[in-house]
Length: 587
Image 1 (cartoon, rainbow, N blue to C red):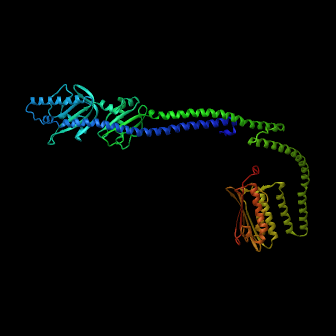
Image 2: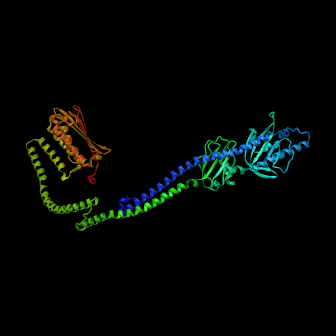
């Protein structure tokens, strides 16, 4: 079992450890709270700022992509292309010549947009082969085989995320814009695909400064489809696509969340999810919490310095605090051994001064008590001799009652003889060799003798008496003559002016101890003494009050007396005492 440290360790060490531990705990909590609060504030501010920045990036990308869409629109309105797709050429040579001219036309567009476009493809029926140019004509029947066909089939145009395409005999990564080609009569003729260089988008999406800080960004378009990313490596790209697919399958937002990607990242989305282009930024948490960590470390350094200073002054104060206590302890130890009084310092005016003055007064009082005790010891010896002499008196009383009893028998007075025997029995129990406690059995025997005397005294008045005492409760101890005032009230006042009556005494086991219930069927009274009949006021109120005061002095709460009575309906008095043996009676 752990002992109370304030009862075990030296006060100086305990004071230092307690005070130091409190300061360290306070410092740790201060740093943690400071870090959390500033980190949360910085995250909120960064989120707002980054959203505005991402919105601006989204506008620039939208402008670039819109220009690509306008180029595609102008191509789909080219009359030569529409005629070629309608197959209005007379022969194969004419078709070959027309396709070659269109190839040069489309290639020139790619060359003029060299910083944005990488190639152009036209899906049509029965195209002729063309090699070596960034523009090409593809078979319409191959279109459904493309993985992005579902996007085009559902609308007239669509953006296709970054993929690998073949152009000019090489395979290159590209972000594509596909648009269906219709004639003036709304006849579907083919599909135009413009391949945009990913670098052109990434340069706008993420500049070099952000890339050096570890920031990563993702461009979404065409219904939350991933167009391209900047800053992610190949392995991260696979994880990124899976995460975005899972997140956008539900209405939850990534904005303001933290994700783990080798290290924790803070995610920010551009403002409008319904916009055509949406940018998502992944910012390293260390970049956001750098200032928070710096603030926490600064507070920690200040706190450590404060703790060291506090420990220094605490050590000084502790020694000054313990010095008078040790002086007082040494004086007490010396006095307890040889009764020599030590001189205490007189220059203390605080609590230590009170202790020193109290020590002086205590030692003077103890010295007086020692002297008084020696006198009392001598006096006690004298009283012991007198007590031995006084022990003759009870024997003299018993002998005298015995002589009177024989005189009553010789005078043919049997009732007086019986009363004298009962009185002698009561004296033996009441005196009980000087003890103040008796067993429950002895107390009830005393009460029984008293009631027998009252039965003889009150003849021809009929007094019925019954006593119930369980055998299990007979051997417990109680104050002697405790019930006599209660029973006397019942006999002397309860049956005033009556020709008969009954007293019933019941001893029961209570959850708090032993309960003595004294019930009579007499006149009754009101428990409020002011309302008692005149003949009951003097003795009745005093008897109950006397028993109450004895129980309160010996046992305290919850023990005592409870009185229930009404005029004309008798009275019930319950006396509750603890259940105790002789060995632990005065515990």
